[in-house]
Length: 256
Ligand SMILES: [Zn+2]
Image 1 (cartoon, helix red, strand yellow):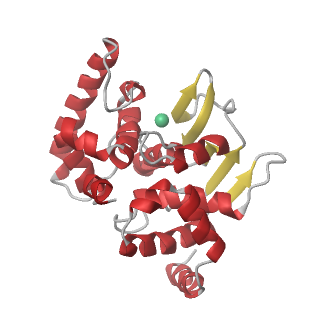
Image 2: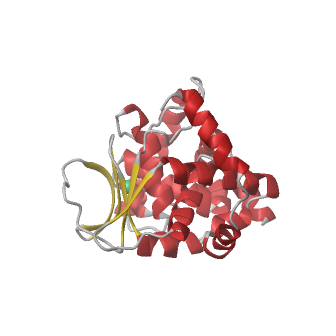
């Protein structure tokens, strides 16, 4: 779409009052929404309306994909990019919702997958759609403290995939961040691989030890859902993700 047409359509969407039913859904079902201050909530409400309008949405087979479901997915996805410049998820065109775990049809092309024994809770495809399990979306959305959020996870993969490569390094907002990113991400990833290998308890889920791409996605879940613990146990990683996402999630969680 031409930029001016998109801008005009967005203005039209945002000129409408925010639906009261959607507001109730945010309060009831989106745990992270409850941690935001009033300015952030307002920005998120705008972002999610544009997100819902501009993405293609599909429920598989006879799964009835409703508006409140879209609100929950969009709200969690837009929390990620709330303070980022531009439209970092513009390349994600289609979101497909499965009722529960599913077996991905093309396992060879997927690059980010949250496994549960051969079936998946979510999948992100390079230049392709995002697939998510509704049961896990809702369960994860309601609890903002358990470190698990399939929407944050798969959309973090999509941020990583922006340049077509999935390696745990998304395009960074500042050139000078790259050396720190390489150093800290490598050290933290290797530390998690060691800890997971020894069966040690860690703040960051062991699934992050799968590869650097999963480490970025799992660290992102931790940054938004267990930020105070992450800042305490992984201060450099916390500051790195804070510089990337431009949100001080630990301070926000403490305030909430
Ligand atoms: Zn993944």
